[in-house]
Length: 108
Image 1 (cartoon, helix red, strand yellow):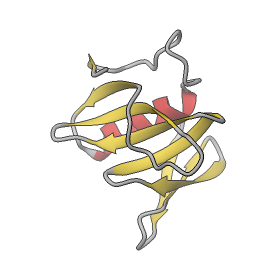
Image 2 (cartoon, helix red, strand yellow):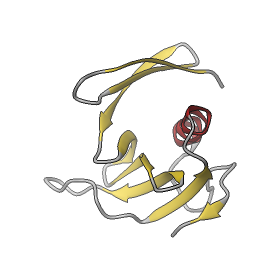
Image 3 (cartoon, one colour):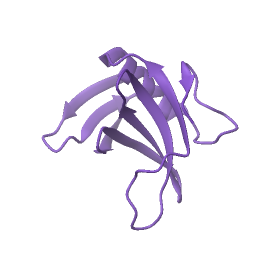
């Protein structure tokens, strides 16, 4: 899997290229919404105090992100860890039965 960051806009939309396909990620308070996995859930990546965290959050019509159903931490805050966490967010299907790989701690 190859991820290249193409840019970060002033409003914090992150544009990146994953395996030749360009994606623009919507900003959240401390990270980005990576993808919707169904009509009721999203996969997000957010910055924590010491780690990047991959999250599955429920989405209800008219409600913002904010509640966390499941979460896994990836060690460190450096760019390499962010890219690894984003890669796992894209690869993960969003189910609890098949958690993402490479995490160091299950948060929820």
